[in-house]
Image (cartoon, rainbow over all chains, first blue to last red; front, side, top):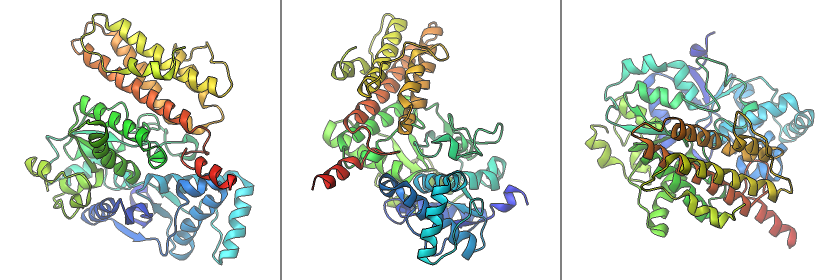
Length: 310
Length: 140
């Protein structure tokens, strides 16, 4: 079976952010999947991936939590691919996969906790975890997208922002950096490729994997605001009028600290922040509301309408 | 080595710059000093070595040993080097001031990231938010 065929139907793991602050990412991912004829089957009774909070206290408990999601997909749903659009979830499932393959102690803890919880222990290799970018890139690809575009994104200058967890640490992403066609950990480009296929002009953005301060947005909000402000200003200087995101933590941080920067530092940066799935959805002819633009904190509706989108 | 507070003003966006190469070198040197602060705070002596012709990259490598979260500024360091090259090796280009501004903004990001981490250093395997909470619990 080819990758393209394998990814047509995947177990969908939205994670907690996509049920809350990142709901528009959830909505737009599902809408784009439907428009492209791809099948998403939500993981039954899924749980938290362990996020950053659990991982900081006990990384092995995080490995267990992520493994339970993969166990459900593999053993209860008979799925062999889990698609996680959230960078945090995606990262944690990949980390769990790596740990279970390479660390006996982690495997023992996961086995013990799985038995205690009454479900089958996840075995390394039972499923493949992919990101929403892999999903669309490998099933539809640039050529497939081009042929489906109804409203070109031409006229949009986009800075693609991948955040820190999509490519780091490198060793948990063995499929990346494998030459032509694979994603790069130092200069990721899958989002650039897809949005360019939909007609957008990508700008050369040097902070595409830089820290947005998401991890300390509560403990040190002022520093997060400064980091986000610098990202927004750098994107603006690069010529962008939109920052495309693929992580709900980054997205919320950019939107909220954009407002906070204006309030606390008096610095207003006029740049729109949209999930890449929202942009692709509108390029495929979906209405702005259908891809949840109204659920974003920042208001992009007028801007999009002026560009003939949404 | 200038203090972090002193360094902050170095990263302000340059206006009219008579010598772009000198200003680029100043930004690169200031970025090195930012990493020197991080390494010194960890009880080590900042290396004088270079990697790929740049001390900044050697310092980043030294700073990330034993602290994977520091890799979050790996590409930022590489972009500083890239833009420094654009500024100093393509001096005849008309967009030299834009390139210099971009170098200043990327360098500023390194400064903000490292100075932020200095405030809440050694706070977890991959994220720096939880230690104050854990410390508070331990104190109870």
